Image (cartoon, rainbow, N blue to C red):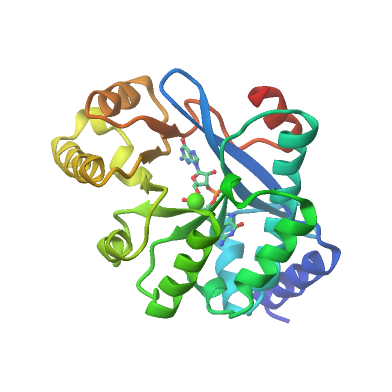
Length: 253
Ligand code: C2E
Ligand code: CA
């Protein structure tokens, strides 16, 4: 049996057992106020090794497993959001789940997510669908994104600047926020061309009234530069690494 066959069997087993782990990375203002949370999936294989999402997400996609996986992630993240809001009385603002365009291919996605949300007892206003930029986005996908938006979910574009359809999103969908890819943020205070690009994007978003979240901020120099040019929301190791739920509750309390 090939190595990848083992991994796929392992992924099937984890889906069967519903044992993917979710970590949560908060987003902050410069003054360390939490303005949102992103749910990030983690996978420990049968040998006990953590495998990067950059490895297992594409495998789930190639093997038509991303849909049931996405619902398991949503279910756990929604339960975490419910606990924060209703048991711990913590207002996290918005909980974002990552959604790949392949998940939007399934006509049942809105109904399935709505079923989970209602069953858990959350309002749509506290939830965001975070969509990775992709060349594979179609007009049907945009229709589904609009349907989520009409129901009250926030819509976020992920990894802005790295894909093919950035401006299509801006023109087609009312956006709750736009996440600037880490490649533009890393050492921005030292690099003039990065500065020009990010400055232009922030100016455009200011005109359009779309908040920008800088992803992957790791240093105070990056934050100071970004603040100076109008960026108000940050996510990255400087503020917090992705956390398990108990650590999240502690930091957010
Ligand atoms: P992403 O959505 O761009 O998520 C941000 C990634 O950057 C995460 O990697 C996060 O741990 C990492 N990160 C955050 N702050 C910093 C920082 O300051 N420095 C550095 N170097 N990295 C930082 P992660 O968790 O490995 O996730 C990788 C990708 O896997 C995500 O990229 C997302 O596209 C995908 N992914 C994760 N969970 C899910 C999921 O539930 N569904 C789907 N469809 N995709 C997911
Ligand atoms: Ca994301």
